[in-house]
Length: 88
Image (cartoon, rainbow, N blue to C red; front, side, top):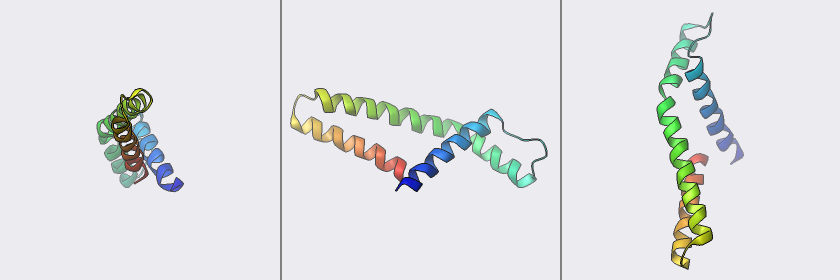
């Protein structure tokens, strides 16, 4: 379980690094193409993180302040959904 989450975090970090520095001097053609592809994934990764954070914040708020038990169950489900997405 931890290795999947670690792999996701490493992927996000590599996308952010490739966006910041798309090419390294002396890189092979394959490495250059891989970094360009990672840099192209930047918008998608940033949106995944932003949506996940927004859903988690809203879900935790509903979990703490939810008007009834059904809303709190739904909020718990959304938290599980986000965690499951990142652990895939």
